[in-house]
Image (cartoon, rainbow, N blue to C red; front, side, top):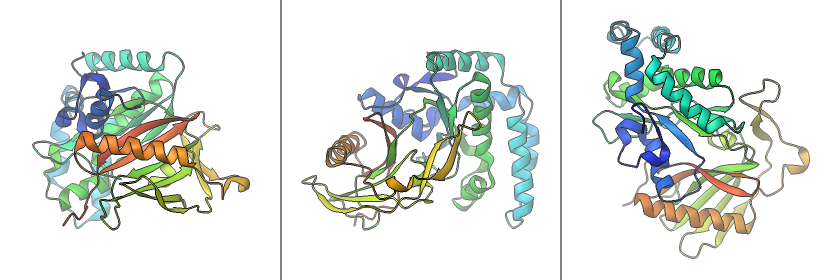
Length: 322
């Protein structure tokens, strides 16, 4: 086990401050044998190690102290300055060595990876900020992966994340981020599963939204998606709505890395994304994940070459249970 970097099988859901909520939950599901793409976490103390070794803390403190949340343009300028400090910093040798060793282990067979953010708040139960940070897909080389790990660290200081902490009365410098580097699933189908109905808060219903390609088209809200409403007790479909899907998110072949959005082939626009067996497998997996965490779950999933993978699970937010 390294000092700065840990594989998913070396952590659990208890490690939220070190790993952030996303990586802690992925680690817990790995321990329980769920189909989690293998990966590792650059633990949260690593960013402070980068900041300290590059002498950035006084500059960051000065910028944070000058924040004026009534001046949006000024906030964008100041948060961009912090992001630039982090993105242009040198990763200390001891940390860089560990990261590179783990990159080699996870890409040795030519596999591509995604870099994703895993966040928490120091001394708090807050372990996610949905939609606040970016995910970087289809990265191949060591140079690309290291660059995007630094971009992930820097995304802790996006203007939207900074305002989010301000509105939640969270001390700006108590935010923690632990980049995840995870085997890329080149999904034919992907989406979200809610193990309770997030709209009605009905605990006896499960909801699936799905589209072809990467799940980014689903979570971004840019595409119409297929919708499945499931009776949680019988696992029977109560409703199936096949939408006319128009947008798909896929590998950017022109750049050779990253994702891009394009139009879905016309002949697939009204084809159902999931068959009955896939819906059944997905909801059964979701129920087992809910049992592990003891709370209704918001689950991101993907299917590649017929195999299902779980990419993320977190508690459903703002679920009315009264």
